Image (cartoon, rainbow, N blue to C red; front, side, top):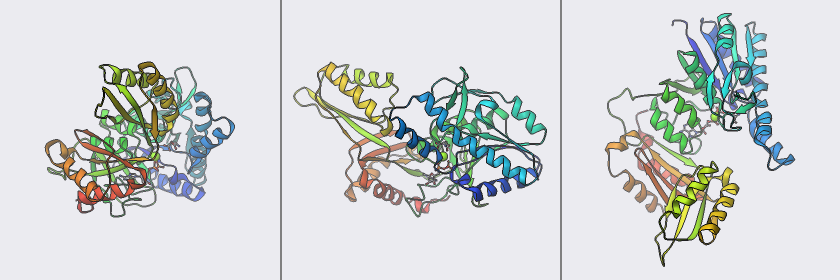
Length: 409
Ligand code: ADP
Ligand code: ASP
Ligand code: MG
């Protein structure tokens, strides 16, 4: 194999303890010895980021976003330095950098910053002097020279963006499963590993709860047509390539199912049935950066309607505050919420040209006595909100209904 420029990313479990870091160092060295140049992005060890967030909550339940970024960016600094040390011990040259040092420039929005550009000079210089470059994932430096982070799961984004900026030959995402499966293999035990998946399908899976890839990372991969190879850091087995088009002519209609348990439902009751009120509600939520997903307006009775919508649980308190204010303003009734919901989705680009998928999805849930509370569809997906304690069962039912256990991976 000709020498390549490879970007690799190792997730939290993959660098979770000393032994895992040593194993990652061995893998990197096996590539470097073949003459490849490597830029390696790492996540924080194990659950470090969650632990740092918990710690902040004990000090101040409403911390400033700037200080949150100062805090949670430290996890990746630890793992990157340790990995560099592990490589040094094995006699190879390596150098670790923070996102800021390496010139990952972002906008100013703390905890969810967007990458504006990556200055590659420093990395290229080190790569040219035959060092393995290790980059702390999940972080950058804002245009105002502040440390920023890229949203949860953001090391995936660091890796894909870096691969694009460097013009890498390969972008490999090493994680704790062997690739992208038809469903989360920890919930659906007969889920099948897919050899290929399109950017569009992966985007939909990620946006609907499959945390294996960060949605924004897949967006960048798609935008710049950078194929992403997802595989296990625990084995040498073949993984999944996320790419533009399927190499095969025909594929199964449904290619995956996903479960999201991190959303909550808010209902604004007794909204006067007048034009423009729904616009008022959702404009105000959007102005405050609340990501509204599904929306259902109930049948109007006595000139009143109930409007329900889902938001990420992390923004529930903020969303309720906004919704209650709007409800007062427009003369609507109570604002109630339900945190015990789950969203199940079926996904596949083949759905564009195939009818009957929705009907099959709804009837299989009904046959299993799973009540659907909300529905939304896109060109290539169908999502249903169900009671939280039925979410995993619903996922397994849909997986079976669409025979995903028999899919040609
Ligand atoms: P990392 O720490 O490597 O970034 P994550 O925990 O973010 O790893 O993502 C990997 C996890 O994603 C897996 O352990 C698996 O439980 C989950 N997952 C959810 N849906 C899927 C899917 N369709 N295919 C593979 N993994 C999935
Ligand atoms: N450590 C960060 C997180 O847990 C980023 C990542 O793992 O990708 O969200
Ligand atoms: Mg991740």
